[in-house]
Length: 231
Image (tube, rainbow, N blue to C red; front, side):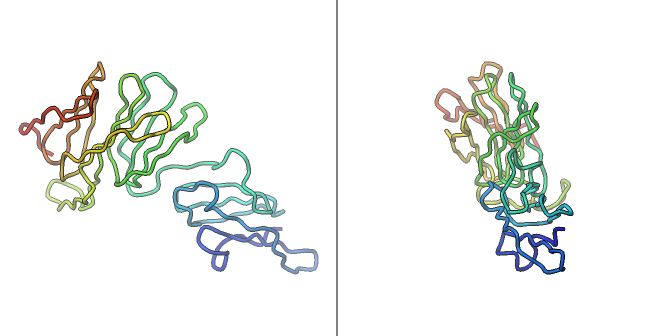
């Protein structure tokens, strides 16, 4: 049966070794697992479990993923078995206007597109900061999100800590998640982003108590609303 995989002395961060016992009880290394080569968002090994024969090994990562390997350390097809965002909170979620997919943006500073039919992540981009709002354009070709997260506690009286990359507007093309716009209209985190029904205008707002309005034709800021909103 499988003696174990990974753990201390397993070959380095994100790596593990598969050991089996022969009929005499002698231990023999039969494979090496390397999670750093399979596209993990955070490749550190959190947990390992093997079947009795040592032919299948499940590895849980710090990136909230489970991968399945064979006994020699080769990753099996259609991996990972399951995955998700892996740090703090997830607030930003938006459905595609016509496809069976949705997009999410989280405190782990990743933007992800998910297939609702296959229940799989189909695309991912690493962000410069955590994000808690994301929106699809009406035609589904463009994604807009705002960066920032509450790091200082919960509630109106809690002290808020803002990072140097909070308050950014990021715009991506849906296909390939290519970034087409980066701006920083605010020193504080962004809380919401919405396109107009015709897709010609994008509005983003956050903890600076302003609404920043952009023209999507040129991605230039048209104006901002200074009063009337409080977080």
